Image 1 (tube, rainbow, N blue to C red):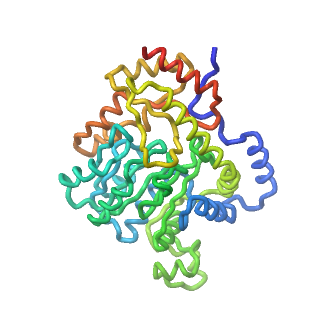
Image 2: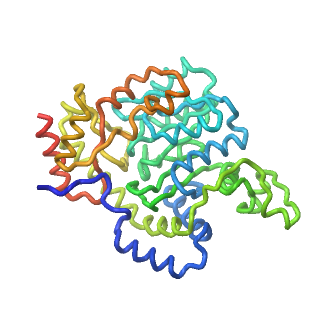
Image 3: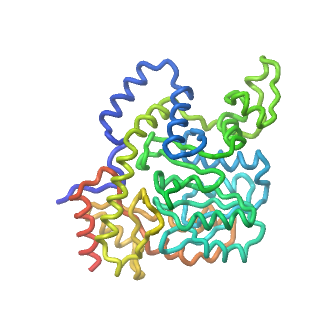
Amino acid sequence: MHSKIQLTSSTFFDDETTRSKLAKFILKSRILSMSNKCSEFEKKFSEKFKLKDSVLVNSGSSANLALIQSLINLGLLNKSDKVAFSALTWSTNVMPIIQLGLTPVPVDVSLNTLNISPSIFEEFLTKHKKIKALFITNVLGLCDDLLSIKKICEKNNILLIEDNCESLGSELDKKTLGTFGIASTHSFFVGHHLSTIEGGMISSSSDKLIAMLKIVRAHGWSRNLKGREKKILKIKKDNDFYEKYKFHFLGYNLRPTEITGFIGLNQLTYLDKIISTRMNNYNYLRDKLNHEYFYDIHNKKMNKISNFAYPLVFKKKVNIPKISSRLNELKIENRPIIAGNITKHFFYKNYFKKFKLKNSDYIHKYGLYIPNHEGLSKNDLRYIVNCIENFYE
């Protein structure tokens, strides 16, 4: 009997070595609160993905919260503004929009890419006016035509921000996902491409936004800003006695630790191998699984699909809980695609009316995803394909 194939196989890549290095780092380090390792990780992460600058926080969810709060603090978003978002997404993409007094408006996705397409977004804009921002989710390492979506946003004065938590390393037309909008968020939770146990990052090409993110990350004070950043935000220095504890904007405590920074730097050295393995696994599963049964979820313009987990969206209206149970019996872990249509969850329905989201509803009812990670062997992949083909037939 095949051993259980889980959605993630270990906390870290090269788990034992990483844990050993981490233990030594903790024992010898005098400072474990946010310091030099965090700054070094921010710099190396930005360089790796050709991002201008990045701000490290304690989770991907915190990254979303910090980004929305920063846009509000800068006046780029205002209370009650309408923010469009991908209906196929995670709860904490939508929750900050609600929590911070903005109005969330869901956008449907394409069955062929799991993402918002230009045609879907253009049709959406004919029905929904005065949209101020689009928080788009790059689902499972995939995207749709982000270049065209960016042009639509620019034409309509809509801020484009990307949730890139599941797509680290993916590229569209040789341009890294997470670089199309004014800012992007990333997650380093266990099981993601790069794990720091918990952790997240916000990246942006805007110096002003980066400075504000540093304020929002740490209580709303300006202590962690450089002189140039203070000038950008027009923050005047007070008497030294008060300056360290002067609060300028609404903020939180979302700071990471030096442990996060250390692990991030360590795992960054493995990332090329992690991404290439996930790409190869995705290509193998896509090639072997029968598309008579499943939608072929792909984007030919993407030169790198750094797949987070492999999606199965059934063409027939099958009983997904039953199929999930059967996969579990076969020791293949599975779950809904992200969280399915997020507007079908109780927290959203308590606040807002229903929207017609045909494709997101279909994915919610007839989709799930199965493991894809760097710990899978060729034998694991063959076993997955054989099991799915046999039981479906």
